[in-house]
Image 1 (cartoon, rainbow, N blue to C red):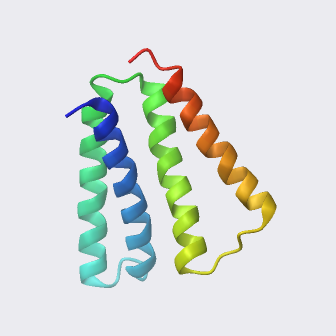
Image 2: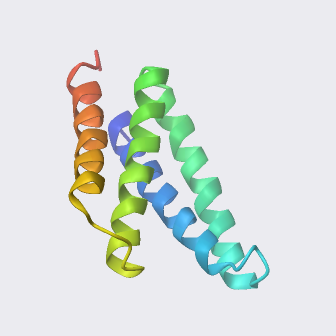
Length: 107
């Protein structure tokens, strides 16, 4: 598996575990908690795979950026969180930063 593909999957799993935390009700509901823990372990495992070939700073920033961006979008779509222009601008800046890091990566 390529480092970038592992990193993308790790980032998507970060969104999944953040979503799971919301449904776990403070880690008191068994199945949402179990799913959250599995997503965390898989996310960390895939991040470890990605770090074998990608620069640390770039990989970490992209991983957290995918998680943050995805969580913001999930919040807007599922929880009706605000999608005002400033929030969308900030979201765009996060994505632009990730793209910039990817384009500037030596790998």
